[in-house]
Image (cartoon, rainbow, N blue to C red; front, top):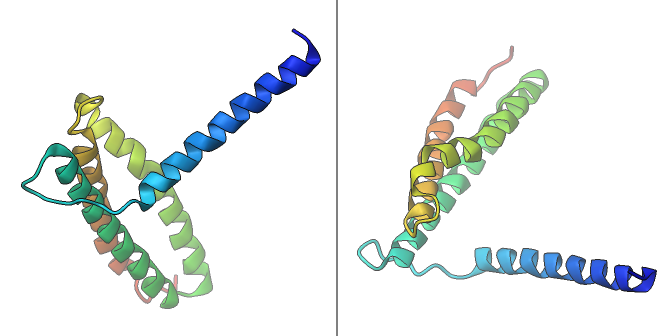
Amino acid sequence: MSGRFRVAAWSAVAALALLAGGAQAAAQDEPLDCNPNGNQQQMNDCAVRDFRAADATLNIRYGEVMKTLSPQMRVALRNEQRAWLKGRDPACKRAVKANEGGSIWPLVFNACLEKSTRKRTAELDRWKGREQ
């Protein structure tokens, strides 16, 4: 394989990877067609909507709690939050593995993310006002 062809091949691979990433990002921005009594895609969209709402609530609560903490406790909470985030998605993927590949998988995965996120939001309250 000539050097020129190899560069062209790698360029094509890189372009495809960028296009795939762009398509995924665009899919996240698409409006949701949520209908809890609709078809599977519509129910999946409801689960995405509910998770996004839970995630937004979590982010607001996290910011509120951080404002009440001493600098030392902010670092501790930030570290705990990062560890929780790092583990949340893999834990949900394990929890819904039986549905992997099925059309219901997005619904059960996003429902797991929502439940975990709501639980974490409630846990943040125990951090309010901590100094040590």
